[in-house]
Image 1 (spheres, rainbow, N blue to C red):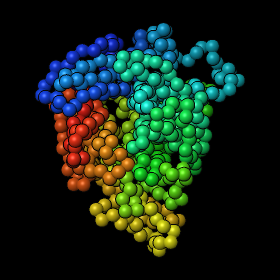
Image 2 (cartoon, rainbow, N blue to C red):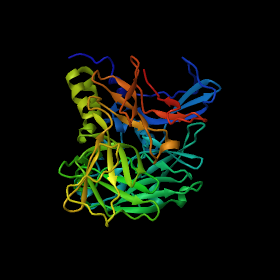
Image 3 (cartoon, one colour):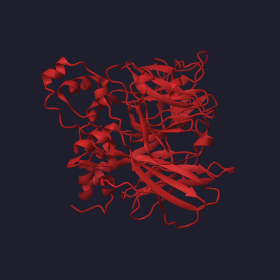
Image 4 (tube, rainbow, N blue to C red):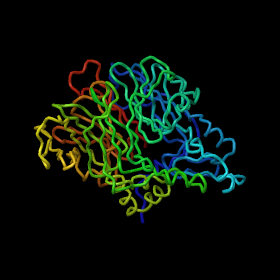
Length: 481
């Protein structure tokens, strides 16, 4: 066994001290046009007392801020002061369960008492909103895949208040990746019993005016698909029901006998992935059915309409094993054992793929087995089956040898929901080093940036204010050393 040069220890760091505003040392030149603040959300506190979180998704949220002013850069951070954080700090141990960490059971709550009590979905969720942000007007909310969002004071990074979205809407969760349209309206997705729901928060209005604008029925009410993101185009919302499912029977069982929420996610390769197109005009679901071979995913890249087709780009995993590689025990093992590191690298090997969904007309004469993708520059396939279901076979945008294509971003303000050419992501090659990549979806050309002992995170593209070309701008990544 040998140590992998600190590659994985970056994920095992424990941020116990908050950093007040400090000025950064700059190598290179900051463009004069570049100014403003970048907020990042993610794992911060790994330990509470002698207790350690079991999964990378569990760490207490750390809010980080990078401010650019007149060619100077300033950094500061604060831990999110959620009720979960406060309860844990008060007891100096983990008393609130997270995704992969089950807290020590209340000795007063016997199995009998669990049977006698009413099941409440409140027991499932933490308010440790440690994934992303949702901007509503001039307000900023930290969010995760839970019903809670936490208002943040963007200047001071202070935690203002936590909002339970279930008190405003008939949904049990919200995703970490909302969308904002050209008019400033915010869209998100939330689950309810038997349905996936599209949520709209009108521009410049408070959350009190949020509403459900579309419902998608699940055909697997006891095994609904897990989702972390979705897409929108000019006329459609795009939702993918994947084979990585949430097991409702396991949820009920754990109410009585305990267990971490990570146990609820199960890989079901017998299920096809289903693509749903939902009208943005009236919320109706397009009748045409689209399926693909099963794959797991967290992040969509983009979607757009072209010549009566909907094109959907996704960072795809071959199965649900990616979650196993993110447990802290697995990370520790991979740090000292190269064999384990390469095993986990295969688990987290994602590939960017393009799916094409033709918008078929019932009057068209279509033969069974016909490829109905008529886009001349596309290698994706869309085959009509006997039951008038379109089976989608994707086109690869990145090679399989690129061991990772994740945390994607685009020129969002210009290209979200529209035809685009470039996306940016973090990747990991055969040498296991984390890198930044730029992918040309037209030529499949890949450009890579890396630096020794530097671990980049999710990139953000900032366009030049007078840009002509789609890729004219700067790419931000909060990289650790």
